[in-house]
Length: 298
Image (cartoon, rainbow, N blue to C red; front, side, top):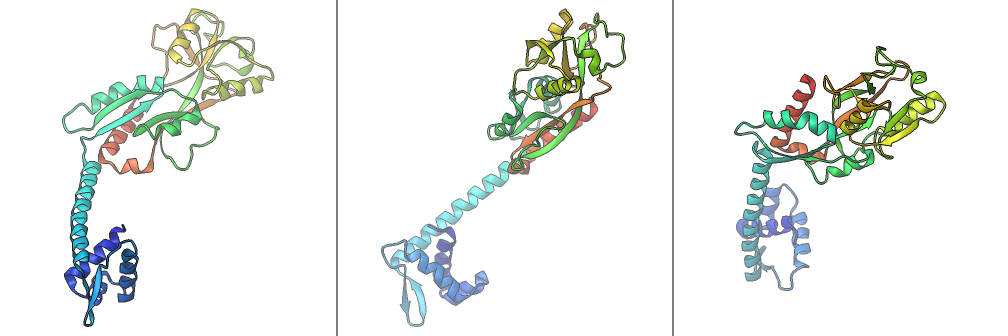
């Protein structure tokens, strides 16, 4: 049954006339009558009857009006519960991130939110192809995602909060022949062995751009999605790889160096994705604020 129609029935029982109900709702008496007629069509027994010039409730109508009052109380309680959930700063917030972003941001984010009264954060690592990130917003409150600078934008149905634009550099061993150069060119790289991501993952188009710029295919010798495994391969031998400058930067002493490509600047966007309604929650807003602060300060 329509809740608005039930409310009109209840108001008729309490106010005593169609005219009084119409005044209370700022509509015409005819509009109220039409709604009550629509409600009557859903019930097998009469809900109202004429007594003189007034329309009053039958016993069945009074019983339904009482039920409408109970429904109104239940709806009010439900609305208050939703309001408390939306406004609760300590509510649980789930967040997923691709591997290198999780490694970079989860620890400081958990430390920032560790004090009493902050949201309870639940972390997940989900590394998928670019087209798979928006769908994760159905399973997690917040999704840290990445896409290449000139790739297709995220769907309009998803709220997008930009976190950073991250350059992509060439990772090489500190024993590589180009290790002493401040930067490299595409021509320097065409004969090298490469560590590539799997097909469909966001860095693949960047590697293809290098190949197009070089006018020949790259020599792909390894296919590794995890940057830190790729870094281990790079440190061990002659192979090179594309790596993000900030979220996967090799630590000092790793034996790996990052070099920008001066004639083909490459970058990716790291964004926070979520469903639009998620941003109405106070706890989610606190996590977003904390994450943005961590990103800008690291």
